[in-house]
Length: 602
Image (cartoon, rainbow, N blue to C red; front, side, top):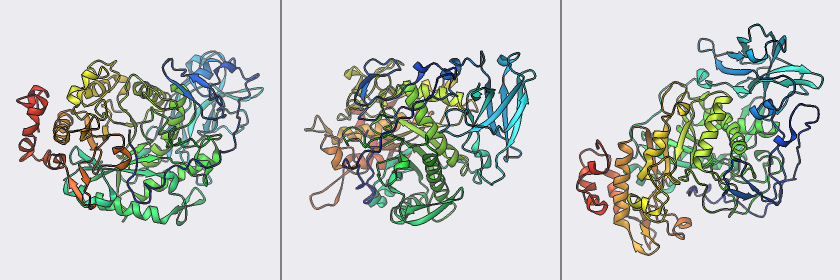
C-alpha cells in the first residue's frame, strides 16, 4: 500500500512525469536454427492490452508504451524443453561455497539424462544479463560425462581479482552454432559463508514502527524493537562520497547518505533493529538503473521501477549500489546497522516495481534475478541479515485498481519459490502487509463481512483476521528454507485508520485494533516482527481517508497523540499490557482474549 518516505530530502524526490522516455529498444532473440520454439518468446507489446499469461483472466495491463522485448533465456526450463540439441536435460542441483575454504565453489551436477548422447560436458559461468552462450568460447572446465553425476570445484576469485559471487553456472554442449546450455542456471546458495560478520540478527521483540525521521525521539520513546525506513536508491547517486567496486569508482550524494547515516545510527545505537525498504524511483540521470526500453510512467500508473541487471552496465551499477549499502550499514562503523532488507515493495503490484507487461512467471523471474544481486551482496557482508521481498494483502486476486500489471500475491510467492529452487535455493525471507479490508476501516475483526477475507487458502485477501492462512502455508515443504525451517516472516507495513468511512471518528477503534493486532502477532510463532504504519498521519494518505498515524499534527504544528499511541507504547510491557488493552475487549465483543486467540499469552 503506502510506501512513501518521510525524509525531508528523500520524501520530496517524487517521480517526475516530464522526463523524456528512454530510447525504446528491441532486443529480440535470434531463434532460427537454435532449437528453440519462437512462440516461447514473451514480453510487453507497446500500446496493447494483454491477458496475464499466468491464466488470471482478470489481470490485464497496459504496457504504457514499453516496446522492449526481452530476449529468450536459453537457461530456463521452457527453453531447454524446446531444445533440439539433446533430449532431456542436465540439472545443476547445488552450487555452494565450500564451508572449509570459501574461496572454492562446489558445483554438483546430475546429467544422467544425457548419457549416451554426449561424451563431454562444458561448465560456464554466466551473468544475469546473458541469455545464451553462442558467443562464448571460454568454458571453466570440460568434464567427461561418466555416470552423469559428479561434483566439480572452481575458484571464487578469478586471476584478475574479480569474483564469481554474482554469477550463475550452467552446463553446455558444443553445436555448430556455438555452445548450447543443457541445464538450468544455478547461483551460489550460501554467500554468507564469506561474510566477515557472522553475528545473529538483532531481534529483541516483535513490536515495530514505520518511523518518521523528523521525530525519532518520539519513536524511540514508544519502546519499539524494530524501525522501518524507506530508501529510494535512484536518488543516492551523486557527488560527495566515492565507493570503489570491481575496479570502478561510483559516487553517492553525501547529503542524502549522511542523512541516512544519522537516522540509521540513531536507531540502531538505541538497540532497535532497522529494516530498510529498497525501492528504485525514476532518475533520468542514471538510465542504466532501468531495464532497456523502460519509459517513465505517470505517477498514477507506477511510482517505482524494477532494477536493471539485463545489461552489463546496469548489472555493474546495481551490484555496486547493493555492495555500498551492505558495507556502509554493516554496524561496524559510525553509520549504523541495517538488519533487515526488503527489496522492492509489494512486488505483486507493478505500481511499486514497474518493468512492463509480463505474465506472472516471467515478471517474477525478472525480479528474482535482481533480488539475487542484493541478496548476495548483503549476505556476503552480514551472514544473518534478513533479505526479503514484500507482498500486499491481495492473496488470490490481483489488486483491484491501477493501470499496470498486477498479480495475486500467492502466485508471485509460488513463482518466486519455484524459481529460487531452480536457480539455487537461498534463505530468502518474506515481508507481508496484512492491512484490514477495506483499508479505511480499522475493525479488522469484522473483515469476513467484506466477502474478501476468510479462513481458506483460497481467501482473496489476507488481513490480521486470517493471518494464519499465510503463515500456515509457509509450513509447506516447498516453502521451507535450506535448513528445513519456516522462513523468517516480517510484517513490514500495516496499520489501522482512525477515521472510518471518511467521517465517523474511530480513534478508539484504532487503539483497540493496535492492541488486538499486537496480540495476534505475539501469539503467532511464525511472525518475527511487525512494523506499524504509521508514527504520524501522512497528508498523502489522509486525503483518501487513511489516518494510520499513532499521532496527528495539531493546528499549531505540534504532535498530538491519539489513544492508539499509549496502547502501542505499553502493549508489549508485561506489567501494563493487559491494563492498557482492557478497554478493547468491549469494542471487539469479547470478555477474554483467549476467546479469539487460542493459548493466548502476552
